Amino acid sequence: MDDLRASIVTPTLRESDAAMSLSPWVDPDNFNPGYLTRGLHLMPQQGDHEPWVHTQDYLTDRETFAAADLDDGCLVFE
Image (tube, rainbow, N blue to C red; front, side):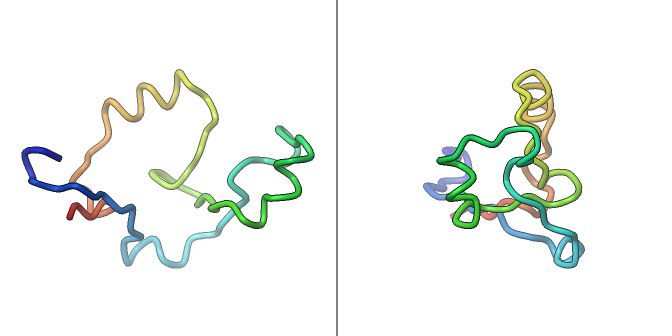
């Protein structure tokens, strides 16, 4: 962000992602504490393909984030 002189980055859907299916941020069958279940409608949703999938798996996310293309049209730097 320093190199781009940006102070804000915003995830933005590409035109090709606009029609994808949406799911809850977490799988209620896999992780369902009451406080989260009650507020799930207030949380962001996830898509059905990368980079819009939230795995909740640290090791997977660690590898995915390290190899991510930050110039794929999903991030808007300002």
